[in-house]
Image 1 (cartoon, one colour):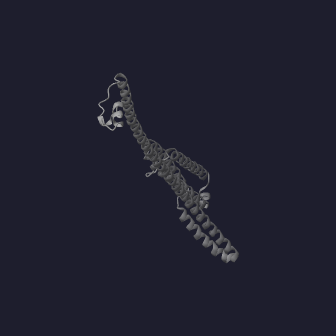
Image 2 (image 1 turned 60 degrees about the horizontal axis):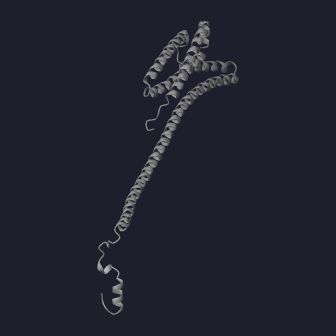
Image 3 (image 1 turned 45 degrees about the vertical axis):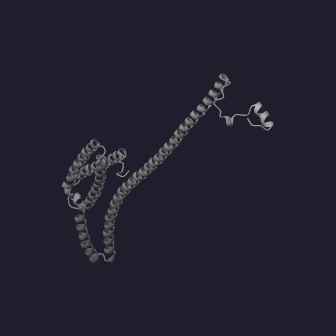
Amino acid sequence: MASGKVNVSKQIDLMDSCLSDMRTICDAFESQVTRLERMSAAERRENAIEHSNWRDANQRRFNAQETTMVKSLAKVERVDPKTAARYGTRKREVKSKFNEVLAAFNSLGVSKDASAARSAAMFAGRTKQMDLDRSAGNDAHISATAAILKETHADAEAGVKQLAEVHGVIQAANAKVQEDNDELKRVELTLKEIDSETELAGKVVRNMLKRVYTDKILLVFIALVVLGVAGIIIYSSLVPDNDFNVPDVAKPPTPECVQIMANGGTC
């Protein structure tokens, strides 16, 4: 399959899965917005970093699912434009809802980028470290540094997880392409085998026709010979005295001629 055969059913299942995950993320944002609304402004500011990290991680999940769905839509559109249009409308509806809940989430005091929040936390951590160094010595300094490293490690793990998800999507696409190529090769081999068998069958049929024509010609000649012999036999039976104009040289000698030749004469 030079152009790659699109398995529409498989792509539809993949798009349904993406839509389901995107809706789940929207629902999670709605629940988080409700929880934040019940909190005081001070509590929201105190947990701003945690909320920002949660938002960024789920936003990355949503974007990854959206990217996968866009790729599937492009494949399906080449084969079934109506289905692609229907799923495109569903995707836009979910995207619109996500933008609404994201805006509501950000309006509750967590609209700063996670990177900015982490920078502020790191700065506050350094300030706190200086105070701890002055007040509690090296043990407190080590604890604060470990907390900062732990937070940085969590961010790195989130990035690695996102990369792993993208890598999984790429591997799935490569596996599908390889599967389609293998199917194309099998079909091509089957067609070649059919062509070879068809050509062989044609040769066999031509040889059989030649033999049939040869047998017919032989039968005609045999029939002519049989008819000729039968005609001679019938004619000889009807006209027994007819010598068929046999030349004298070929005729056998008569008894009288044999007697004369025995006496030294000639016929």
